[in-house]
Length: 408
Image (cartoon, rainbow, N blue to C red):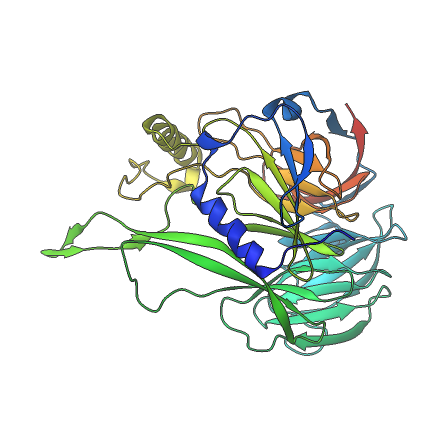
């Protein structure tokens, strides 16, 4: 069994991520599986790997579709906040607007509903997360109630649990196959200590009953900067804000571990559910420095969005008082596949052509392909051969569609 690395190595990886930059990364021509002295496997990818990898495409016609602007209640979706595909072929959609779980057969017919708005057992106030468990049970996270609800494959509520020691910033961000939870907490200082502070985010593993088990790691959350002083009522006011392009760490849970990307460096970590770093995937890429040209492209896009929005009223010049991050994010969201693989969202720099590209890794970090999704879509669930998307049309009507993945 490969020797992993515990919390100390997680902290070391975090420090390296903050110290490194894309300009000092070596160019690696071959994919390698070397191990460092801690037994961590390191896979390094050159940009040519991304450019020459096979393209994955969506099937021309989805195998499942639900959504409509008007019609019967089962066809109308409102604020979808989760989705999953069960082993028997049913599709489950978490409707955040109606506060319920909706079960559909593969033909799109609704075959069951669980939940309603409320605070009692099986009820929800603000359901924001849905994850499947082995045996087709489901875990629902309610952000407002700080509660997880376990729903059986037949739609009945098995149990629920509130997290111990919960705070306002507590958030369940993933579930392991054994039912234990990945819990995120962000603690900001009561008082701003300097004009430039990097606040961390803390990740812990909790039992299915909501009890804290052990720490999983600490990673950068957000950077808080002081904006230039502004005069108001004869007084100079100093405010603090998050820099433009500053992105927090992204986490995605797989059955027996989780993926972490700090967005500060061109790499993702694969960590066990015990908090041991097992694998690091790194890649080279273009310079991510936020230059004056990047800033102007950002302002141009902001003006265009405001001009295109009929509700924005008078189009004003964007405020230039908000600071920028030093570098663009190395990637966007992370989505773990049902088999433990990973989808990495590509960050689209200002001024580039609109794109919704994703890079696909296998369960052990091997490069599998690149996937281009519709611009309006969000990934709800992904498997090695299928992907469940939330899409919106020009009227912002929501649709959930299941596609097969094909080699391009």
